[in-house]
Image 1: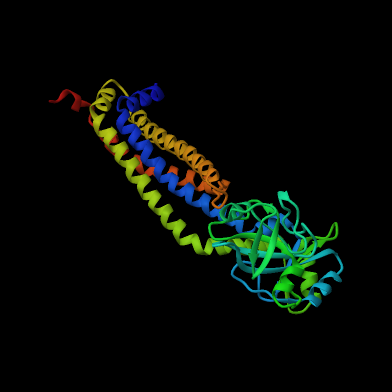
Image 2: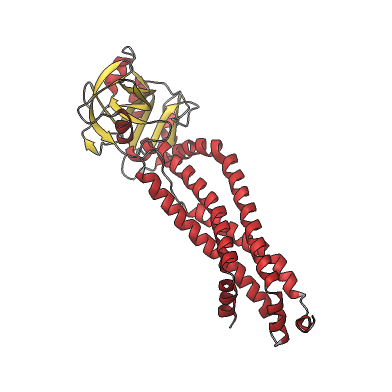
Length: 366
C-alpha cells in the first residue's frame, strides 16, 4: 500500500515534484560535471605516458613530472640506464614547450622528440614523422587549417605534417611529435635528453627496476610509470581541488535546500491527508515511511536525470571538438550517490518530525 500511495501523493502535485527533481538534478550535475572535466584533464595530461607505455620513466634528480618541470639529462645517462640489468630497451625523449604556426594561426604544444618512429604516440592518420616532418594533433590541425602534407613552422623551422595524433589536446595545448634529431638541430646541436622511457625485461617489475636504476645511475630519478602518472595527475588535482570542493559544497547546499523545501511543502500540503490516514489506523511508522519514500524517490529521480544530463554534456563536448573531455569515474559517481543520500536524509528530517507529531483528531476540527 505504501509505495502506490507515495506515488499518488507525488503525482497529485506534479509541479512541486518536478521542481524538486530538477533542482536536485542541477545540484548533482554540478558535482558530476566538474569532477568529469577534471578527470578528462587528467587523462590528457598523462597522454604521452599512457600511450607510449614505458615501465619506468627516468628524469633528472628531483623531477617527477613532465608538465611544469624542467629535466635535463646527458646522453651518457641514457646509455648508463640501458646497461642496468633488467632493462630491455631505452627510449630517450626530448621535450620542448613551443608553438606550432601556420600563417597568423598558432597553437601551443609539447613538442616530443623521439628516436624511433612511433615509439611514443603513434599517429592515427598518416605516418610517424621523418626528417623535416612533424605529427600534430587533429584538433590543432583543424585550428590551423592544415592537413597531412601541409607545412607548418615550429622553433623557426618549416616542417611537413606527416601524420595526425588523437586525444592529446586540452584547452591550453596539445602534443606534437618530431624526430629527436630535429629538436637537437633546432636547439643548436646540443644532444640533450629530457626523459628516458624504459621498457623492462619480461618478469621484471617496474618498482624493482626503478630501484636498480636509481642505485646504478647518479643524478637521475627513476619512477614506475604508475608513480610518475600519479604525480602528473596531482598537478591537475592541486590546481583544481579548491574549485571542486567549492562547487561540491554549492551543489550540496542547493540539493539539500531544494529537496528539503519540496519535501516540507508537500508534507504541509498533505498534513490533513496524513491526519485522515492516522485516524483510519495508519501507524506512525508507516506514515514516516511514506514521507521517506517520497523524499527518496525525488532524490533518486534527480540523480537519474543528473546522470543523463552529464552523458548528454559529454556527447555535446565531443561534437564540438576534442580539446575538452568529460570522463565519469566510478569514484565520482559514488561521491554523487553519497551526496544524494545525505541530501535525502537531511531533506526528510523536517517532514518526518512534523508527521510524527501530527494529531489524528485534528482532522475532525475546523
